Image (cartoon, rainbow, N blue to C red; front, side, top):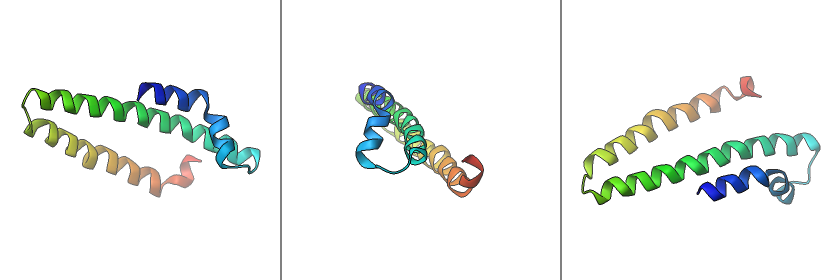
Length: 90
């Protein structure tokens, strides 16, 4: 996952150009969003490895509760915040 995140950062403009041949403004905005995708890729990998590591120690309830609270508490709340206030972020 870390290698994928690095590739997202290094090759973000060529990756965007393969999908979109629009104006330079669209390519610039999309390439900036690729940095956010790289951060997601990295932290998703950390989360997956951490959850499996904790599960291997036979502590099943605590990791699942922490994962669900993170997904519902942090991720969902921040996505709603950014989604409904997108005009202020651009």
